[in-house]
Image (cartoon, rainbow, N blue to C red):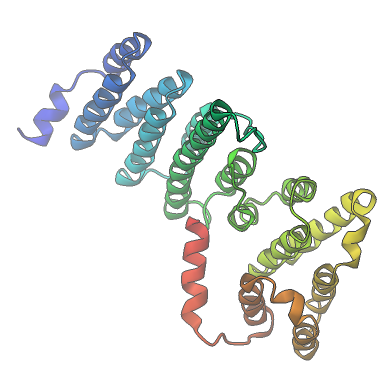
Length: 324
């Protein structure tokens, strides 16, 4: 059958949307999922991409509204895949649809890890809750990572549309059972919302282990600087100092925070020798995390033209950071 004949024989898309809605509302969620996939694929084959997107968007929203996260996420991912196949531009209409699907992903408070280990039911319930939380995060992450990549390729900034990074960073922070602040920070620094990032770091300081707070702050500032973003690096440092002054007075005494403050001042002028001197003087606290040295190498290259020993490190690092 020719593609043109297929295009002519496909019925109006609303007929499928209405029919599939009934299937979902009858409780046949997984059957509906397969039908959404097969029917949308026929429209894609016929290059009727707009209608395929209508079907996938409707299906994802319905499945998510009924609590079927895996099904809804599958269709959301297919929605983005179809955007790529159709070379759809990154515009407000499509971003609104992505926002709508994102808001339907459930947010469930992660239960406290402290349970009575002698109570098998408590342990089982905790393990089940944590497993569900990890699954939700993985599904949402796959969807938004694909959306970020699409936006970068079809009209958005080269690192992806900022709001998509903000969505992912916020969901990872609030919903993930095991916080990965490196991963969260990589998205926040591309989200163009340093105030929100600062508030998140302040919140993290109230729940992290000793010694993680100054590391998270320094990492955030250095990530901004490695992108050449002095404005937001200073903004987030000032905001954290202001908010933390009363609750965390010991923060200003941290060697790593002192180093970060001196670094921000140094980068405002042509002072490579001072930059190198700071790295030597504060080596012990910088070495607490290998990533800090990598970021400082990128900062030296960006601000002072110092070539990295292996230039490929920075190139591949940028790719992995965007996709992380």
